[in-house]
Image 1 (cartoon, rainbow, N blue to C red):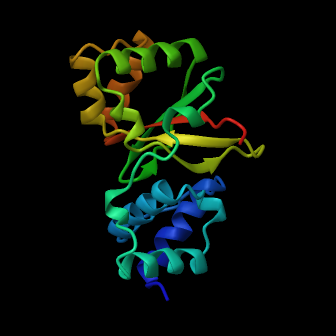
Image 2: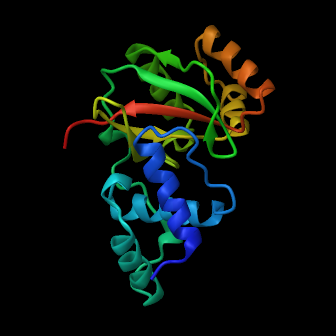
Length: 189
């Protein structure tokens, strides 16, 4: 059986995955991070994760069969479609801010990834890359959400982004954004 906080965190993830506004992890941030680590390690989507499966994964961890706190990138960049635009938007306290998202073209996204690889900074994306949500049309997404500070540090180390995105980052930071979400379209499995 899972705690109420795990249930709340799972409900918030499912709400986000289904595009429900107001999905919140407030008060259950630790459980939300733990679920994220389970999702990444097991390679299961949030939409397929229910309370019974979550309980099973937690029992497996309690039995010492796996340590989800040491999650790994199970698919990484192989899971994203680099021929599609990437939606970029600000997040504050694990909740998207109500602003228009920025569309990074496929070419700009490819250039960003190539630069991150050259700068040995690719973990900026792969550390948090996961299949958590989908568009209203059912298109599955692989989302990465580096902190604003991590993204700014990579920019200082040489990551070149479009000027219009850099302007948006400044605006979003002024609104209190602490993370930046990159929604990549997931390749068909």
